[in-house]
Length: 134
Image (tube, rainbow, N blue to C red; front, side, top):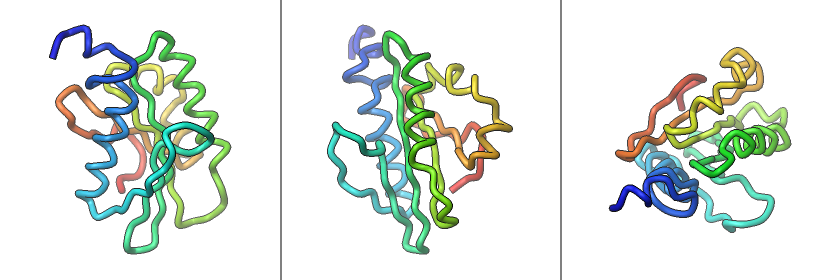
């Protein structure tokens, strides 16, 4: 893969599509089932269910020309989806290269909102930055 693909917002390891694909595959390995959702429209990046009844709503962001604003948008989309359902948890999953933008919202605030922060690195490794593990 050329280095130009590493920074593409559409494809490659830093793209949102790759972040969603890798995180979804990781969830399946953990026993979750991911709903098939349209790639466009007002849907979360991932809507997953665990056999024990838990639900996970995920917004994902990759590297873009304006990752800062995109991360703000990701938080806004998550906030609109938060309900009082105790079986539903929330996560923001980002490419490792943009985690600094996600961390502008402090871990204390994310904790109060019940939002876990995960990264997907260029090697396809999923890492919990902070929040409650699944």
